[in-house]
Length: 370
Image (cartoon, rainbow, N blue to C red; front, side, top):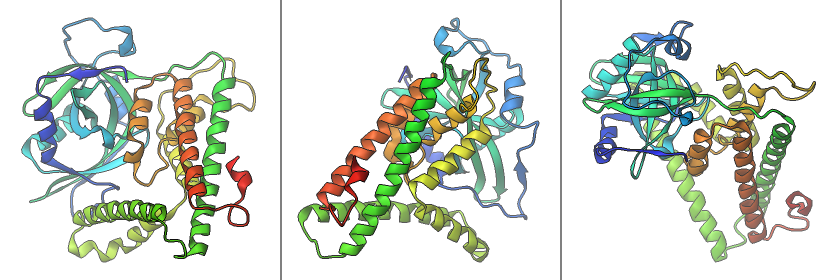
């Protein structure tokens, strides 16, 4: 990571997340409540066009990307909760300071907020830029908000800490290499590794199911404990989601619950394809490339592949360090390389699980581990 913006009130920032609750899926909205949805004059494009009258104490360096300084409100999050391009998060804002932050973002910042990612020494300097995609005010409950990551920015200065965080930032965009042959090769490697992982995970699950409970060695018990912990965390996430539902809406949401169960059971390749499509559709950088070869992927497609590679786990925080590193990179080639490194580590771990389970010969296709 390039830098951590050191601030003297780091402990205060850690405490300030107590004023809202973060959910794991899109908000449910009810017609009886006021609802705002994004339109073409509300979001990242209008925020970019806004001329913020901000003063900074030092000149901008090359690391700030050369963009104009912009004002942005910061919602504090643990760095494990980082959102990448196209991802969404549902929040419930109930404390007065965060309701004021929300109103400021809506009225003065075109519905754009940044995620202040907390680290040990302060806030990570690269932040996700998010649009307030929709919201609902509910008396006695606060504001239910859905935010979607649509870009990134580099923090220049923290301008305000009370009652909420406000900063000056410059937007980041990827640097493209002059020749796209290597990025295209890395993108192909990412797709092949994703396909291998998906196929091998399916075969491993199938082989374990066929073996049933015949194997009871200590290693398998450890695996069972890991699986149980994973299921426990998923169940907690589902309970958190149920908290956001009114009793009268539970029946109406049964279909949504079925869809989300399907999402949880979808394989890695399906999650990769979904993340790719969402990242592609939310990319508004407007890349230009003069010497692109026919048949090559476009810069937008390569960028979407680079983001999607980090969005294939059911619980994204498992890849938190890789995801924060990916967020911090401003070079497309470097992010694609990082994605390949991460996926190769996953492949290595999966091969170890296959060998530990003794799935060889007729139980497992050894060629898949090559």
